[in-house]
Image (cartoon, rainbow, N blue to C red; front, top):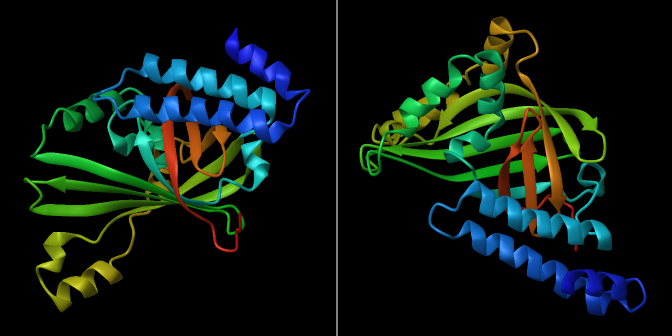
Amino acid sequence: MGKEVYVLRWTMDDEHHIEKPIVLEAKEALVQATKISSPSLETIRSNLQDLEQIAEQVGIGQASASSGLLSGDWECIYAPDDLTRSSPFFWAFRQAFPENSDQIFSITDAIPAPIKEVGPAIQTIDMDAKTLVSKVKVATLNGLATSIMTTRCTIEGTQGLEGIRLKVETTKPEESTVLKKLGPLGDFLDQNAKPFPSGEVLEKAVEGSSRVVMITTFCDEGLRVSRNQDRYDEIFVWKRISFGEGMEF
């Protein structure tokens, strides 16, 4: 009842006195929930539901596809599974290989730390250039071999108020420490190796599988909550690292 009373007061009082504390409190509760060791998806959903209900009533974080706030650099602070799943490549991979993807993912997920460690996961979105770049750091062999798995996507357009349509184009391991040990030759190979045409390969497996829709149910100056339209119950929480070029707040 407390939240409902405050929201009703917001419609009558100065929004700057009532709106921000309510939303900030709900955002902080969600962020704190992500910091718990292995938080359950149910815990994240509960906190997110509180945030989305309040945000909708006060008109904050809505219509993400057209608000202009999607652009920028974001770090994933919560994923329901391995952080690699935040990449649109894995969303598309599921579409291309629905019967085998879970089994393949479970094998790599079962590799314990420090043999395999994942993170951080960073996304750079540019709504003007129509691009989304996903970078996920993967370390193996106790950190002896690391690389940044980089997937580049084209933003083909928006879908409704909250969706953007993505087409996976290429995937490439970048900044490999194995290549760096080769000195200048390794740098040359890293910079000049052609990206793997993952989108094209996925299309050969199943037509249309390289295209996915990212639904963002909350996005403001500091926090974003996005989902794969085909697995809507799964939640990815992102914190902003920076705004896109030319954006001022």
